Amino acid sequence: MEATYDTDALRNISILEDLPPWQLEFISDAVEPFEAKKGDLLIERGSDDGYTYFLSQGAIELEANDGTTRDVQADPNSTITPIANLRPRLFNVKAKSKVKAFRVPDIVLSAAGCNGQAHNPDEIVVQSEEDQMRSEAESKLSFQLYNDLKTDEAILPSLPDLALRIRRAIDDEVSDAHKVARMVESDPAMAAKLLKVANSALYGGVGSIETTSGAVVRLGMETTKKLVLTFALKEVFRNDDPRIGNRMQALWQHSAYIAAICFVLARRVPGMQPEEALLVGLVHDVGAIAILNYIERYPELLEEDAILDETIARMRGELGAMILRRWNFGPSVVSAARDAENWLFSQTRAANFSDLLIVAQVHDRMLAGQAKDLPTLDRISAIQRILGEQASPETSLEILQEAKAQIEEMRRALQG
Image 1 (cartoon, rainbow, N blue to C red):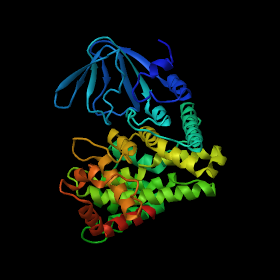
Image 2: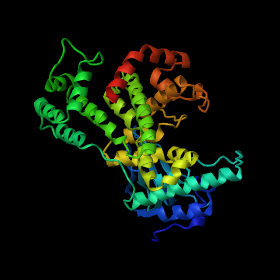
Image 3: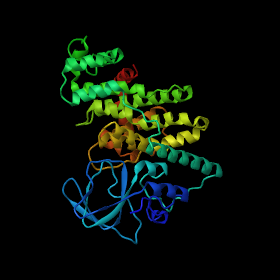
Image 4: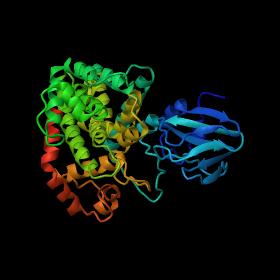
């Protein structure tokens, strides 16, 4: 089977039909065709592998978590739509016959400005010539970034070494509190932060703790692991170029505040672990970090704030998801980073990290007087899933006002 997909055939895909020829040619080179025989598993429920799948020939079965199934047959006379595209996946997708299918990396679709939704034919979009030129420049930068990612030439952030070593030690279940404490103490600033949090009102028990091992015992291994990783991430938000460094510092301030809100809100949601929510809040914009680091190669783009801002808005979600997969985060964290600004995100399951991030960012924008570009709050269903069916904008603001001291305490802990 050929390595590229015919661009005319790509026009039959609902989310690609309006793209210009040069973008279709780029996408055709990224298409990965494959075949499967009857009974093969194409997509696993709960996964998020960074691809969007399409069925071109044959029949498939979608099996939900409760065992209910639905069959889908390829129709050569209809436009092609993505298969089971909500993330993490809601269905096991199996071949019911011999099938031909293909997949496209999500980050390629993101570079093309596709968000998984077909174009609304009733929506008329008129762009000025200047806007069209800026949009094309921004889109070409996105594709260049993808090409460099594919050839390992792009600058992707790495997890700090100390956080990795502590995560491995705790996950391998071979370390006790004293051993983990000694690892933490190799970074005095990290040890001081852990002690400060363990003695804060957020975790404080009876009496003050004065040793790192005591802090690990009070917090527990899993909480210690997540907090160490969270505190270490500050190192990722650095760049020696002053112009990029200023943007990076603003991004860190924003991420730390969103993380603190996520931590406090998660305490109200049954079954949601606050420390993991804290981490989710801090890494939700890691894709923007990669773009800012990458821009070092194109310093002239720092003069084009509009293009850079549009590139970050277009690529941060999928690029962040790619980085978080490399960092071995689970599908729920990966999906949350992708959906962090998907204000109309909707699902029928219990509240998840995507909902939490959306609510945190909505409140951040409301408090900063930047809510004009948001949908009306009654359309943001994540608010009800996080704060309850009866939640209103007023009650949600009251909740955060009551928790203001806790949010500020965690924000200060993150910023050190």
